[in-house]
Each structure stands twice: as C-alpha cells, then as structure tokens.
Length: 389
Image (tube, rainbow, N blue to C red):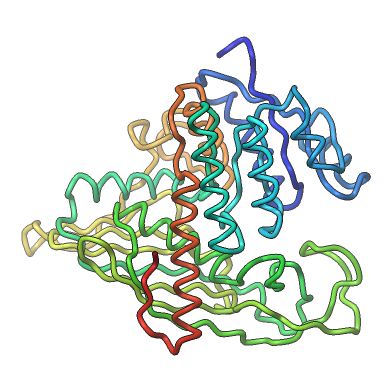
C-alpha cells in the first residue's frame, strides 16, 4: 500500500455510519489495496453522541461541524451518511474543495439537487477528484455474479425483470414518526429509501436503463406519534402526532432501453418480511434469481438443457473465483450484509488510486433519481406512462 493513506472524514454516525465504519476499517485488512484509508474524523450534531461513536467505531477524532471537516487539509475523502436533505450541500462543497466524495443513496431528495451534484462531480473529475454513490447491494458477490452471467449471454435476450424490496418495520401504526417519514428530510418514503436499491440493482444486473415508468404511491398510515427527541429510529414516542408526508408503498412497471419490461415493488408494510430485496431476470435462454435474504447463493435456470434436466439450479457464490470472495473465507463459508461495505471501500479506493471514475457515479445516481421522480409524477398523473429523462 501507498505510504500516504487517504484520510476519511465521515459526516453522520447513525445506522449507515456504523456500516461505513465497518467497511473502512476492514477493507484494508483483507484486500491488497493500492492505498489505505485512515479513519480520521466523524462528524455529528450531538457532541457527546458523536464522540462516543468515534470511540466505538475507531475514528481518531469527532466534530460537530461538517464545514470544518471540508476545510481541513488533512481530510482527503468525505463520506456522507446523513439524511438526504443535506447530501447536495455537503457533497458539492466537498467536491469544490478538492475532496473525493462517497455519498449514500438515494443521491439527493430532488432531481435538481442530484443534477447539481452530478455537475459538481463532473467538474471535480476533470481535476482528478472523484465521487461515488453508495448502492452497496451491487457489491454482494451473488449480485455481481448475476450481472456477469447476464453480460456473458447466459440467459439470452432479456425479456422481463421482476424486482421488489419488502420490509415490515412500519406495519405498526404506532411506530413513531422519524425523519424517514418526512418529505422535507427524506425526499420520499419506500420509493427512495429502498425502491432506489431495486431500481439500481435491476439496471446493474441487466446493463439496461429504465426509459419510462407507470406507477402508484400510497401512504397507508397518514399520522404517527412524534418522537420526544431526535431524528433517528430511536427515541420515545410522545402523545402528540404528526403527518406522514412520504409514501409507504410504491408499485410501478417500467420499460428498459433495448427491450424488456419490468415490475417493481417497494414497501415497508410487507408483514413478516424484514429485508427482502429480490430480483429475477427472465431471458430467451434462461433466468437468474437473487434474494438478499439468501445472499450467498444465486438461482440459475438454463432453458437450453434437456427437458429431463430443466429446473432452477442453486449456485453457492462462495468460490475464490466468484466476485470479491478470494479475500474472505474458505469455500462454503458465508459472508454477510457488512461485507458489501468493505467491497464498496475497496472499489472506491482502487478507482481513486488508479485515476478512474468509480461506479456508480453521481451521474448514475442522477439517473436513478430521475426514475424515482418519474414514478412519483406518474402516480400524481393517474399512473400515466412517464419518461425518466
């Protein structure tokens, strides 16, 4: 590794902060990287809480002002894990200051914000400064392997995609109103929070972008108890109630460039489903099926096999020749959710060291934001077909 590490300043310290901290800490210990990350600074508004997070997760320092992080000469990378309402301001300021930027998905709360971020990233890239959006599920080995099989023509002509992301953490109508249920902070609800993952993964695996969509959004519980304090998922519910201003459920269909249609569902009301991101791609010669709740395997159907041998075959994606797996455990030993963040850190650092644009880029994040916007517009217009750009 390079004698000069890239020093990271992470803005935010909630659930995603823990996941990203895991990635930065573990990646250089398992992968042979051209440059090492140094966990220099974590930033949050609550001085005591962010100091505790720094100690717990291994950051050298903590601060309460993200602007000071950007002004520091000893910070090379800004990692943004805050709610969506702050992404654009932080990312643009960091890129203009010459910092590489990793930003959690969805890229922004609006297409206008996302476009401004993509433009800032394009300006920065011309100077050798890079930005990436964190669609981490691309980096689950089985999902990357699914992309490789499709690209190799194993399922033939792509005809149909079915993608859904099912959670149930809002089924209880007395679950408190958090920032994820406020449009001014989150941008959208299930659509942007988890539907963005389904969109990105479908486009990543197929290699095709959605060109038009038709959908509906629904808010199933319109009022919830307010939290007594804080913006996170923790805190005590009060007797006062507030309005839910985002969707609980998104259903839409889409057309892909080059042919093929897709159906999508994103919901936080799928009773009994905790984190079920599923995608199936059907083609003229076969099909692939991936389920995040069985993340170490991929189902593959070879339609060219003899009739007596037809059926989905389960492939365990644990061999050293599978994507990312050579760095981990012996064949058959499983990996988990947290490993995707190590893969994300690895890919980002390798791209920076190689002077190449990491993917997904902010331009890719903008395109997903345009799909989200088109779904919302379609719902507002009575499910009319709406172009994504």
